[in-house]
Length: 515
Image (cartoon, rainbow, N blue to C red; front, side):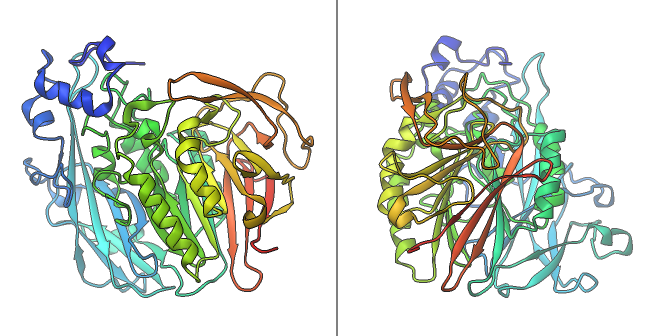
C-alpha cells in the first residue's frame, strides 16, 4: 500500500528516476515538514557512516545506560579477502558509547576490544502514517585473521561486556576461508522478508552448514511497493524484525547480500542505497562501494563470486536504470576476465536480483540480457543465481539465449562447451508466485523433454514482448533454497541442489569444466 503524497505529485513521481525525486525534494520543500526537513534531505539521513558520501556526525542523542541496551541482529560479511578479513555488524535499540568486538580462538578466552563504529539511520515521519524513526547500526572490521581458523566473538559497548559471566551466551563464532581449495558448501536464495516461512528456510539453511550464504536481493521488504519511489509504502522497523529473524544464521554464516528492487529505499539518498550502507558492511571490491554497495566480488576456495546490482540495468523497474552510466558493466567485464585468468579459480558464480531467464510472474528482464548475458557467454560463467520471481526455476545450459544442452535433473554440464545454467531461487520466504496457465510444475525428475512455455520479457519501453521458450527445465512453486557443494582438485565440480522447505530435494545437477 502506498503512503500519502510526501511532496512529489504522484503524476510526476511515476516518471522520475530516484535521483530526480531526491533532487525535486531538495528544491521543492514539502508542506509535510515532519517528513522532509532540511536536516533529513538536504543534510542526509545517514550519519556516522565512515567512508560514505552521506556521512555526517555521531548521534546527538545521549547514550543510554549501557547495561540495559542489549545488542541484536548480528550479521557477518567477508571483507575483501575471506581468508583474513571479516566484518561483524549488529544493531542496538538506543545510542551507546564505545562499541567494540572481543575476539579469540576459544569461547572462554576472548581477547582485547576491537573498536566499532555506529551508523545512525534517521527516517522522517509521515503525518498519520508513522512517527520518525532513528536506528543504530554498529560495524567492526576484523583484519589480519588466520585462514581456515574458527574464531569466537562477542559484541559489546560501555556497560555491556560479552565476556561477563551473565553475557557469555551471546558469544558466537565464524570460520575464515581456507588458504587453498577444500570442499565446502554455500547456500543461496532471494526474496525473503519476515515471517514463518522465511524463518523456517533459515533454520533449514543452517542445517546445511554453509561456508557463506548468497542473498539475491529483496531482503526485508520494509519498502513493500518496490518501485523506488518516495511514495512507496515503507516501514523502517521491519528491518529490526528481519535482523532478529536472521541472526541465528547470520551471526555465524557470512550473509552476502545484493540489491533488489525492494531494497531501493528512496528516503535516504538519491540512489536509495543509504539504508543499505547503514545496515551492511560488504566487501569494498566493487567499482564504487559507496555508490553501488551491492556490486562486489570475492573468492572463496576455488570459486570466484560476483555480486551485481541489477537495478542498474532493469527495464521492468527503471528507477535506477543506468545510474552507474555503464561503469558497473565495465567493471563486470574486467572482473570476469581476471577471475578466468586466475589459475586458482575453477568456477565463477554470479548472483543478482532480476531474472535473466524465468517464466514466472516478472518473467525475464531484457535489460539484464542486453547488458550482461553476452559477458556471461564470453567468460563462460558457470552458474547465475537470481531472485525476483518467488519460485524455483532452472534453465538448461544457454548460449546466446538458446539451449546449448538440455540439463535434466541429475545431469552434468560443461559451461565451456554447453553454456551457462541460470537459476531463479526466489523461494526464500515471501509470498509465492506461480507459472503461466497450463504450465505444469516439474521437479524430482518429472520434467517433460522440450516443454515449450509461452512467456515474455521486458523491453526498454517497459512493454512485455511475448516469447515461446524451451529452456525452462525445472519448476517448483514452493519455499526453497539452493545448496552448492564445491570440490577442487583434478575432479573439480559444483554440485547444485535445490531443497524444499521440508528438506526434500527438488533438483540436482553438476557443473564440471572440461568434462
